[in-house]
Length: 524
Image (tube, rainbow, N blue to C red; front, side, top):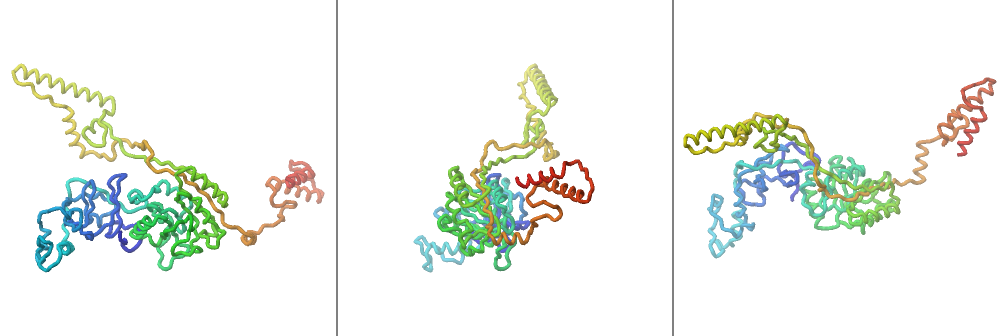
């Protein structure tokens, strides 16, 4: 892939219509999506007269019919000569014969290729074919086919997860949406991802932490994803995708074994990383935890904020070792979660004999009255047939063919369907999947509190100073319960009244009893 069009990434800010050199998602069905970079010209010279064409099982779609189309539009397939793929030099059809057509008019003015592989000027046959096929042709307008369509969708992390090329196991939408919520990812967050794999979580995290496109040198307050991948071929593939999707300002990729070498990125100093969210999708995440501490001067964690971590492990044995290591390193609030998701389909269900012969309808009687009407109609048709057949036999004519009432009803329903409003008919029903199809793994969450030393304690006491004795209540000290405080106030009022020679009856006990109760709670 090549670099997408300049400007904001389509994953952050998408225009109203599809643009050239931009990623688009072709939606064939709920579980079948195809990512495509839209091209004005056929740079790969595949030989189509309509320019760049994407072929699917629902038909062929020239990119000229997709560019400039609003997102979400249903695009009809085009009538494309798919046999012309053999025109590409060096392609799949390079050894196949083909008929001469109008596309071969370029040969005028060129030397004729002889059977011995040389032309009149001594050039080889392969170089001459390459020169001829490299001449740009004028693109023809696409012609709409009789059937087949797709929906053109804007790129989002959810659509990309459903259509990306699988290089490893994929973190699906139910998992990464919950993970980003638990690690408190928001615009401006700096998150570490180890084990990028196919890049599903990378795209979702980039959208979650994106704050703004930097106009100058990046700042420590800009949201950023620091992604690490050990397998170099997967690193190269993901790097090309990040570049073509316009995410290079938000995602920094590093090819590194974090378990052995730590989380030092390629271009960002460790002290400037200041991560507060971590996601580890590793076979042995406990080996990488030793590098996620604040003890080292080259720590990649934010020293002034708590750090939230999540590990993604398919086996319970991995979870046990990870939790043991977390406890030894001072991680708190450790919790394991197992997610299970189920898709629910919401649609309208139409029931009745008016659905006979129509799609997405249940052709059954909707009520007892309608069922009786069907029986009456069948009996009437049968009675008429027998009368006509008896009359024909009496006159010596052959018995006529029986006319089916069902066929007549189907024809009538197809005529009436144009007058009906199918989108508001029927009742709304929900149906869930019978089986769970999403990948499930154990998610372990934990929090590493921020470092707290004597200097932090001193600054906190200066900012939130507290008095040792409340001047408004005699004999009350901090740390005493509210009940004891009320008793101390009551005892103080009685002492003042006794000193002034007054008598106060407030329903309580004696002064000595109240003072003893307060003294007892202080001792406790």
